[in-house]
Image (cartoon, rainbow, N blue to C red; front, side, top):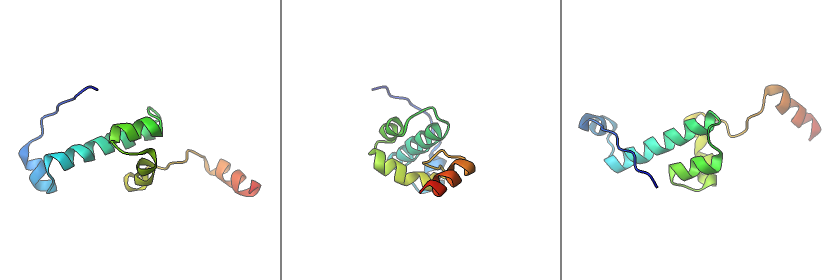
Amino acid sequence: MQTIQIEVPEEIFLSLKETPEEFTQEVRMAAAAKLYEMGKMSSGRAAELAGMSRIQFLQNMGHYGVPIFDMTHEELEQDRQNA
């Protein structure tokens, strides 16, 4: 496993009212969600980056505005008609 370090001003923790550990988890989750949204990571790998199960990760996607299904409106309508 690799470790990445970033410098974060103390004021960030104060303004967010988060501990460094809480902030770290939020950054991991946000990065994982964005990489998943961009198609650069599968949901399984993104969940691994976020430090949670795939199901937990997918359940959290709504909080980040990331759809878990990548279907166009037309594909969704066709799927509905086929049901």
